[in-house]
Length: 559
Image (tube, rainbow, N blue to C red; front, side):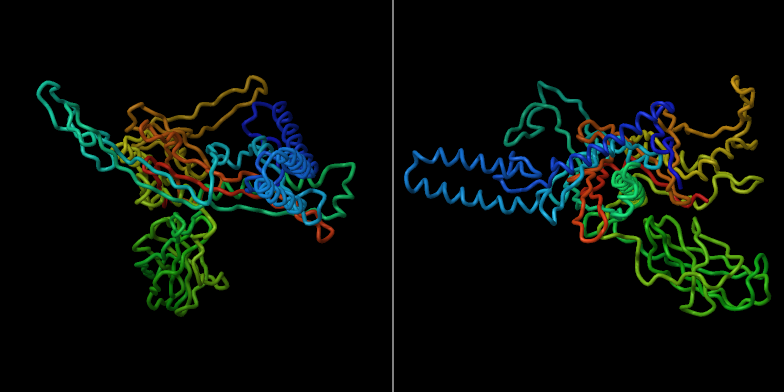
């Protein structure tokens, strides 16, 4: 799909600013290539003697030589033993010159990086709203350990008991203890805390430019720069989806695999469908962002006759983290093939088709090299402040179920009663926002007397018609907040989450509730040329830290 400047710079105010931003992006990519080719960027070496000596091309070698000469001059006044010790260090330092040659631009087999952080900051595509907005902080080592304050005295949170602040400074004594001293002071407050550790994870994508393509386009465009831009786009889009719904392994500090659905039933009916006579066997898997669980138990429909049958499949126990389900059906045990995906805890199958995909033989909901995204954390009741499986439509045109904004208001109320949360935004898919808009537009007992106003366009003489819901009033908010409704292009069907961006607890030391912690942010590496291609890969090393998921919520199964 072609990408326009409006896609790349959706936050720009006008065409002129988009043009300027595009030129700034091209300039940043060009500077990245120049820095790479000149050897200005290089991998950081961890050897203490290399600190401050520079990197890339011959600069490190020249600096080491000059340092060795200066140190040699200083050793002339030393004793024989001291000179011998220093000379041994100098020999070791000179030996580093051979090691350094392996990482210079001129040497074959060089792995020399592009710094893509500047181009990444210029490029703000509309398809990566989470990546655009989440703060990024520096990380170190192989894992991030962080502490969270869950509650404190009189906050009503974290199970910490309330304490009266009243006391008498003249008669009260020995009540609070500070170290070994009992002093005449007010009661000390208490905290509830936990400690979390999350491993850093690597991300990388690769591309290549053939020599023929490179030489063909000389004088027209820099295809290597275009390759870097395409790589960066692909990396950013992949990171956006990971932020939304990736799942990491439980042994590395993350949620782990989604379990199989259980208690699945299959009930046949003789009318309402086009399924022919027979006995049909059913299995269901749970869907996560990137894959599906192992299969459920295997009920069957019982013997069906005639040719107008349907089968109602119901999931008895919905596993934690399931964003939806895949349905597999067969005419004998163990032969089930894929029929459809569904949202909610039940589905009515009205037709049966052969030739679908086979059932999975193993779990694919978890990635041992991944971290947890928003939906993976917020769909877990043990982590999030509120999780609800709606398993119903918000509104059905022409009648039927009509629950309007009740699921969202219930979530707001629960978050406020538990941690006094006052969330700022509600993330949904495009169909869910349209359903909310349809509910508002409808003339019914719940949302009556709304109307659409036609506006005349004074420049074209035409008429603008339409409208959509952009916010929802939080009935539990102490500030009467209107929560922004935001559409995410990759939101799984039926899923949504309510997010508190800033934690209103000063003592916690937490500002943003979610951050990206990066040991190494966006970079790209040119690989050695072992064939007639220019090969490159992007690279990041870090993780997504959810400091305060109790202040956010998740709603699933919105049909």
